[in-house]
Image (cartoon, rainbow, N blue to C red; front, side, top):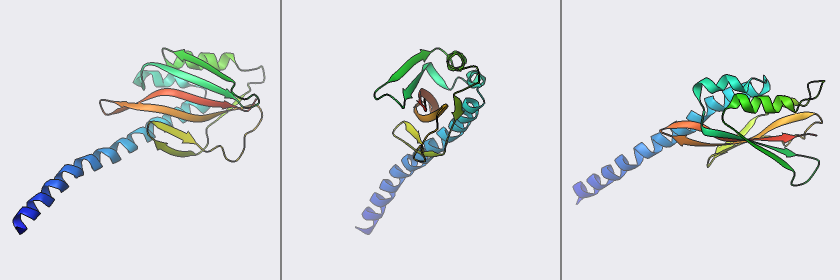
Length: 150
């Protein structure tokens, strides 16, 4: 009876260990991509990420306007360089809105959120959320959500 219980426990343990290891590996996998995206976003150089193709097919950029409720601009691009061109075309002569990426709060269920609890400033475009998915074990960006401080 003890052998049977030990065998069953070993079988159960061997079943759950690979799942646990895969889960922690995928959570770490999105962080480097997010750091690269944050840096490229604040540097106004999203197109530099295109060489690695960190998206599948197309990438969507959604801007939420803070001054008017339920006011969103949504655009879909074939690459990040075109998304960068669109963001730059929205800039004014004084290079505003300024781009800002705050502290990452959490990544859960395909959505990473940033801390905007400290308030937002006028003439700033904040990185708000990023939705992502995994394909063949590789993290890919689906949608970039921005918050416009208007």
